[in-house]
Image (cartoon, rainbow, N blue to C red; front, side):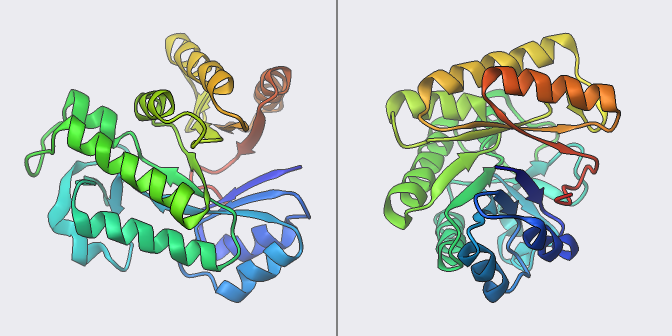
Length: 252
């Protein structure tokens, strides 16, 4: 099985066409025809759709509807903001997105930015509004994950979000079956600090012991020696890995 992550709309159809039966294609379904996704699923491609649970991007069509829920700017991503996930309309919006993804024939969702729980535990730099309490944020994410996985019937694959996922898995064993982690060794084509790499390794090893499915890794590197290092480590631990040569994942 090959992994392919593609969040660039102009590249998604190419990524789907290159995916083979039993390959995993993680895509941003926004702007992509349902027919194209259904065709890939019918061909045996396992598709996961992207949902940004904890942040709001200016490029989204629904930005204006939810911009009043912005908490703070998201460092490193221009035009993206941490959002108040406790708002009932936002939660309903995420559930509606999941239902739309389910209707395409996809089997799962890549749930991004559950790190909002960590942020509410530790605080925001230059907040735009008062952040909700960490407990209300945890319970909002708890509701969202449970609804998508149990009621809608999609596999939820959180990306990162280890602080939230550790707690959720401990309190609700068996619901989250797979996790994704970016930047194990390289982030934005720069080598992680030793401390950060060790932290992420420990988190992935913990997840491997406490979930029933796969640990998946995205690393951002281009040099053959770097790529070989990542692949060798992931293979030795039984983890799937995808190497991206683009900061904005293009599904190569």
